[in-house]
Image 1 (cartoon, rainbow, N blue to C red):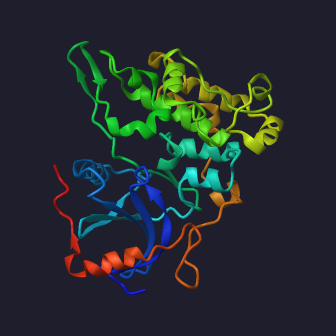
Image 2: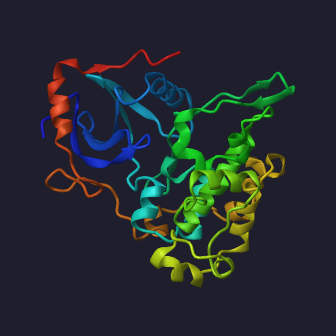
Image 3: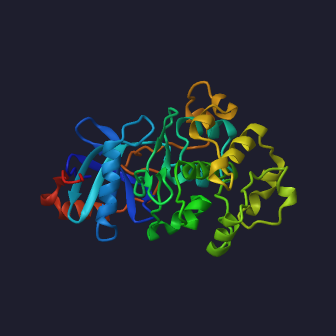
Length: 335
């Protein structure tokens, strides 16, 4: 493949940004390293939203947050290069290799490294590294002048309809009191259920019923032999129902999920308390995900330049070739 802008395309990894963005596997010619390239078509996405995410990624610095290596523009698309997490997202791992949910030891290691929001925003590397992505909706906490409380928000963007399953009840209420850090703790609880069950809670309901169940304080459950016998049939379980009925989650995992999923935000544990919980503290040091998740296949280019995580799309070569003279580094993504 012909190199453009110092990289060659090796294949397609998947989708991001609610399916609006494609993620490609590329090789950077400067050091021959593999990287992830996210192509953001500005004709389909809000420019300010893209700008905000890039700003946060460049401003935040933490081992468990995806770092931006380079940003270039190609025509009307913004291309973001970042470190490759070669096992893809937790969502990819669950859907393709562990449809009934991840092993508890893998869940514990992910939580210890991240305590994050949803499976599609959690990226895994075979060495045991966990990184968080998906900062399009990231916001600064501020003071609520009406109630006199600090660290609260009231913003609710109409574009987050695909994220409602992970949102806390107080966010969906949109009332005077707003929401704060404890809302992220609720999302952690939903993500624990998503990793353990193989799908997020409430995903078998229409939107109206999901909103009703959250508003009345329905608490999601981990699905195993202690809960499935009492539940009605669930289409999400399908042919894997029997496998879930035979397993039994530890009391430690059940407890940490319950502490996160309290309907009232003031009753949820803080992140610092969650990190001190025995389920998380049981992880003494990071193990490789190749040992924790032996079924998962790493992303890597094959001999013909393609890789197994998705179908290669030649349109990207045509896109880059057609704008070969318009490839520029983006330097205006600042507030």
